[in-house]
Structure formats: structure tokens, C-alpha cells
Image (cartoon, rainbow, N blue to C red; front, side):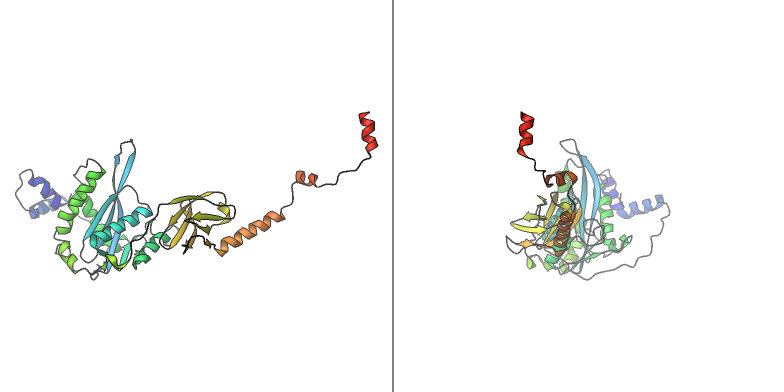
Length: 333
């Protein structure tokens, strides 16, 4: 635990000294620290940048006896160090977008850029940005940036907040259930984290927050996040969503796929692999077809026509020998 947390704990046991005394005592116990790699500290102007990350924080047994993992969504404004924390049971893209929306409402707006690491919800294994997350940020006019691989220090502000969350809030506390964790987390955020004297800025985040120049909350309509829809691909290679049709590769014809709807984009997945992306139809009844999908379907149709019939099928079309009726009369007589 941090010196601040330890001071809070031992004051309940009768300690009357200052946090500096606790720090000096801890320094005597610590082994020589290994210096971190040199990193240039980057300070941003008000309203310019936000840093975001997930953190696994533990697990609990639910009422059905299942072990449920708990994650912390952490967003920090780079200038003021004002932070927002939300605990979730999932890190799916829909949950990530919902947490962003809750954080925007808490701050009353958003910055011009948001910095992430290369988490799976942001950058796909192919290296491309997740189209739904890009769609969400484009909707708000936010520039998406990711730090270089293996250079997590690039987003050091949110990394330090996660360490602070673990040491100052999570460690040494018990929670009755998820609701209790959420309640205590909100109280800690309001009464401790955002009102402390920050070690770097030497000011309270709540005070510096008044100088933030965020894009106002009403600058963009609320982003619509739909549930993931399961659809079966038609024989023609299309999925039907909200009255319109969207093409997919012919390899998934007849199979079930997952369709995700954004405000402007439709994303189709087979398992967790994105197999198709389309601009969302402007009105119901439209047919949105990718020329590549159409070409693949056409080639497949031609190949089927070129396949020679099976031997059993050829017998059906062979000419039948014509015999005089007298032959059958002799047999039956």
C-alpha cells in the first residue's frame, strides 16, 4: 500500500504522526530501487488529450456459483489529472463505448484526442483499428491515437492512475458485492482521488479541471450502440439488418454470423474475425453490396456449373434402348 493509505489505516489504530513520517519509515524498509528507463514527460494543454486503459482487478463468485472477473475502466484527463473509474464484468467493445459515454457525461465533454495502448478492442490483430471504435470516436470528432508497441510509458498518466487505484483504493479493502464495489469506488473517486494534491502538478485535479477546455457534451448527439445481432447468411450471400441487406463473403453462406451496428458502420463477424464492413444504409430496403463479395460469388457460381455430373447422374440422361413389344409378351406368357 502507499504511504497515504497506510497512514489512513494506522490512524485508526491511534497513530498521530504525519504521512512524511510513514514515508521515511517505508524508505528505510525498501530495497534499492531499479531506475526506470528514461522517458520524456509530455505535458498537454487543457482540453487536448485523454488517456484510457483497462485493468483486471479481481474476481468474485456470483449467486450461481460462477467465478466472475472484474475490470476497471480508467479515463484520466492529461492536463488536470481528473479521473473517472468504472468497474465492469466485461471488456467487450460495447462495454468500452458505454464506459466512454458515462465518462463524457461525468466530465461534461471530451478532449480532442484520446490515447490508448494496442488493446484488442482498439487495434485488431491485423493492425487495423477496430471499425466500431473508430466510428464512435469519429462521431464525436475525436482523434484516436495508440502508443507504440512495448512502450506503455507513452501513456504513463493512466498507468500511474491504475497503480494509484490498486494501492490507494483496492488493496486492504473488502467489498460485499459488485454494487458495493461500485458505491465505494464512486466515493473514493469523488472524495479522495480527484481532491488530493497531485504529486506532479502540486494541485488538486478538481481545481485544475476548471481550466480544462473540453468539447461540450452537446456538441454531438448521443451515439447509438446496438446489441450484437446474430444473423444467418442467405443463399445469395447477404445478411438482413433493420430492413436492409448487406453482402458477406460466400464462404459463410448458410452460416450464422454476428452483426454489430454503429451510427455509420455495419460490421459482420464470424466468431471474432471481421469478415465484412459496410456504410450503414440510409433507409430501409437498401441492398449494400461489396463488389469483391459479388465477384467471389460469381466465380463460385461459374465453378459449380463447370463441375462434370457424377456417374450416377449421367445414367439418367442415357438413351434407353427401344425393344419390340412382342419380346415382353413372350416373357409374360
